[in-house]
Amino acid sequence: MGATEPEVPVVDHVGRVRTDHPARRNTCTIPMLHARADACAARRQDDDVRVVVLTGR
Image 1 (cartoon, rainbow, N blue to C red):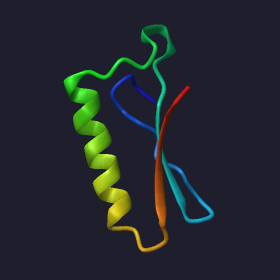
Image 2 (image 1 turned 30 degrees about the vertical axis):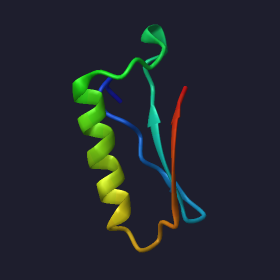
Image 3 (image 1 turned 30 degrees about the horizontal axis):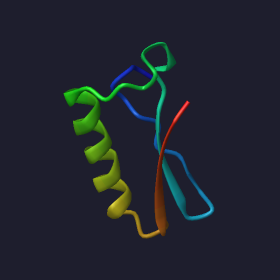
Image 4 (image 1 turned 120 degrees about the vertical axis):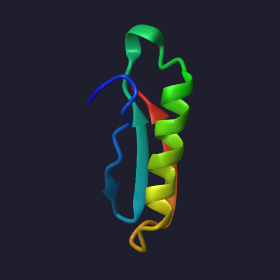
């Protein structure tokens, strides 16, 4: 996973949008914000997802 590509696993109807760039303390850049928005939009279209959690490592 790249610094601007969030992980988007879905487990037990919970979609997680996870940022993994600890060296920069998961600082949000414009590309990261766009990637998060895209990931959230994709989860919204998934009928198996009931809630989305934004998190970092």
